[in-house]
Length: 194
Image (cartoon, rainbow, N blue to C red; front, top):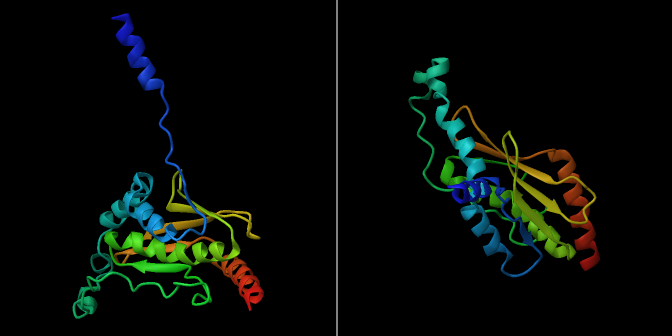
């Protein structure tokens, strides 16, 4: 009996280990690794589930504001995924997307990938790495990006917020500063390459 109590206490006392962050370092397989992380990370799925529950719990805006007649003729959002990002190379990506709307939960990994991809391309062109991890703690932060060696010492935080009209807003915190940091670093890389 005592042995089983000791074993039970030891099992309870073992802390749960956090999921390892994804390290992207400019390898050809980074795109596949990013996609796999966004689709399969249990920690990220748990973060997105909070936004999905929030969206599901919101009453439709037509019920709240008596706009039933005004929205009756509006066709429902299409069932297609968001358009793929134009950012396939750093030269094609003059400015990163800093906010994207996702129509439904199944569109969230693609929308997050579109926000992350320019930073992945930038870091690859700079010969630097990008660490990606699910956010921790309360709030709507879903993902934390840590680009090594950029002027911004703070990690980039991707948030997912349910929209009152349905769907989700996927956005990066502090967009004006990030646009400047990205443009400055991209200009330095492409200026050196010319």
